[in-house]
Image 1 (spheres, rainbow, N blue to C red):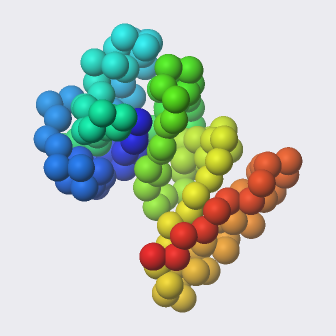
Image 2 (tube, rainbow, N blue to C red):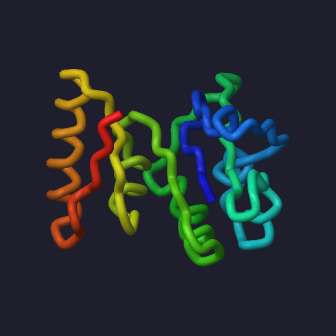
Image 3 (cartoon, helix red, strand yellow):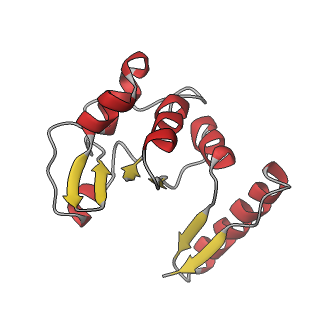
Length: 142
């Protein structure tokens, strides 16, 4: 499962040529409904072993989340699917921080530009402090 956490500007649905009627926004805005069955209904099948939890990619609502906004969704998905890939937007918020701290493994994708390399270094340094017993993030320079 690929979950696009960039609700305002996410592009995973475009990358996988999907236009789902519902997705991650329904789960985040109704955390009390999240269970394996509800999550399965929100997923869009892209291939035999690939499903997408798409972002709405709209500015029609504000996406100010509390720090644990994605916790129930991530916990449920980790229990019910073999592999969960979270596409986290380039933001530093309480929910992004908490989501990264709880991740099993982190892969950072960056472009080889000075500002991006600086931001990547800052993120790697912070994650080392927040996750002292975990391996460092993997880096992909794209």
